[in-house]
Every structure is written in structure tokens, then in C-alpha cells.
Length: 396
Image 1 (cartoon, rainbow, N blue to C red):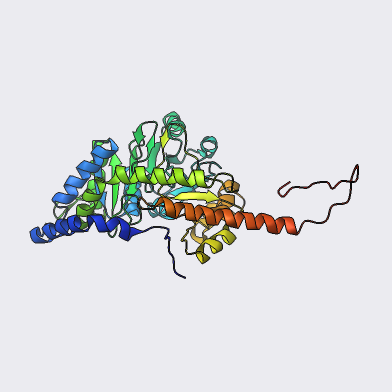
Image 2 (cartoon, one colour):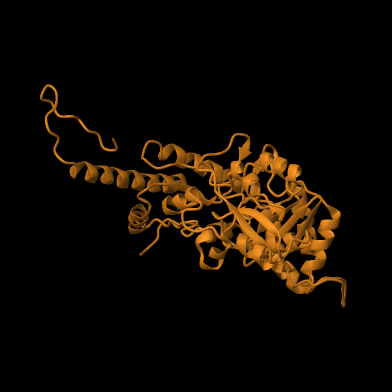
């Protein structure tokens, strides 16, 4: 199947940056400073300034960013971390890698982020942290989360892997909790040409701990004061990310403009559109709609050359390794319903209005066909009252 409008178009982003990136990589290779070199150090400082934090520590990927954030807080076996199941599996992997236990709350049915009303009911004497996920480019409702954390003396770790540049009431993602964790996976709003990640924090002691852990538990070469790992950010990727960081706000603005075009074009066609929280800045890593005819709609769009995605078809609590934590089918009904109905449409900064309108038109045509088919199979109505038909409408 020839996909004419892909879910993500990485080549469109690369082309205008190609010459600058090639020069930057040539400089890195000419210098051969490949181990936590000048680009890594500069990018850490630039990203910290961008997020409005004191410290940013470059790491190998988003999973390690979450893992090292937990390790830096000494969260481990027997501890509990409250989080959500509507996320990429890496959120859960990080918790389980340190030996802690994930405790799930359901999601808000509008934003698909953590349902703040369920958090306190999940707190036990073993709870150490709350790990909200900023999903699809929008921050979780952080003020109530932070207030609960203060009340119960808990850490907050922001999973900001999908929220580069997103804002909550004037504060950047990754700047509100005890730590923030970012992924620079290549399809993210700020993506490397490979893997990369970042941990952000205001606390100098926590930052120092992360730096030591990412480099084999070492602060001085061949002296290893703790059990660490190799979680360093690659110098070549740092060079790419420095260039891309300068473009991030412009790209995010274009994504927001594209989302606004989608919102208008999809109005009244029977699908639920994304909702931006008041006082927040959604950066639309993904543009996610919701419909009960999700699978049929996806097939229709694919047949028309339009790429889509499902993020995520099987919630984490129903994946085999995580069923042992006691959250079986039906335990998180909002999460499970969303997993059956959400669909990600093409979204990237270079997407054109013409492409967006074509996607929206295909969705509208599909929905109209579905309504016509539903109307065609309705049983004939018996005369009522004055002999006129009951006038049943589709959807009543």
C-alpha cells in the first residue's frame, strides 16, 4: 500500500537541516571528542535553560532517563510508584527495573492523562513517588498532583517523554516535579537520529547522583562509588539535538496550527477531538481522535494512502509481565475503553493544510457512509399516533 500522507515524515524535517547537521557531525568526528564531549555539555546547559531548570543530564534514552530518576531517589524493592497504564511500556519498565511496584490509577476521559481524583486512594505506607505521564504532548494536571505529593511527602517524577516544550500554567514540562525524564527518540518533537534522553531537576544533589549513575557509578575515572550503568548521551546525537532545539518552538507552533486546522475540519463529523486544558500549551506530539469505529476507520484511511497509529492498543496493566501486579481486565475501565477507540492521525510540523483537509475529508466521508449503512438496516417503523412514522433518527 502506497502511503501518500505518512503518520510522521522525518525526511521533510531533515532536508532543510541536512547541511548544518553534516557540518556539526564532521566537526565532532574531526575532533574525536566522543565521550561526554563539548556538544553534550552544551546541550545539557541549553536544554536546562529551555526547560527553566537548574540541571539537565544527558542520558542514552528515555527509558534510562526514567530509570535513573528513580535510582537517584533510592526508590527500589518494596517501594510503590503510582502511575498510569495508558503510556508506552518504558514507563513501567523503569519502575520494575529498580524493583519497585507500579500502582495504577485510571485516566481522565478527556485528556487521557492521570485521573487526579484516584491518587490518594492508592497511597499506602510503601508509596514513594507519583509518576504522571505527560501524554500526546499535553501535561498532566500537575498542581493537584504536586499538592498531594506535598501532603504525603512523596516524590514526583514527570514522564515528559512526549512533551518537549509543553507548558502547564506557564511552567515547562520537566520543571515541576522532583525530576523530569525526556526521550529524544527520533519521532519525538525533539528527536535524535538514533536514541537519546535527558533528566531534569532543580536539585544539585540529585543531579550529581544522576551524573554518577549514568557513568558506571563513577565521578572520577576508575573510582566507582556506587552501582551504576552505561547511560551516557552520545556526542553525535547531542550535536544534532543542539541544532534541533533551536527549531523546537517554531516546530511546536506549527504543530499547534495544524491541530487547529484539524479541529475545525473535523467539527461535527462524529469523532472526539483532542482537548487542551485551560492554561496549558499542548504541543501535539500526537493528534489523537476517538471513535467507536476506530479499526474500520483506520482501514479506510490506509486504503486511501493515509498513515495512522494506535497509541496504545494494549494498556500496560494488561501486558503479560505486568498482570501480576493485580490490575486485571476491567480494573481501569477508562483506560481500556480508550485503548479500543483512539487513533493517531498524521502530525508533524511540515504537514500541509491541504494534507490535513484531505485526511479530514476522508474521515467525514467514512462517517457519512457508516451513518447511511446504519440507517439502511433500521427496521421499518410501525405507524403511531396519527398514522405518521415515528421518525427515528440514527443514533437515537
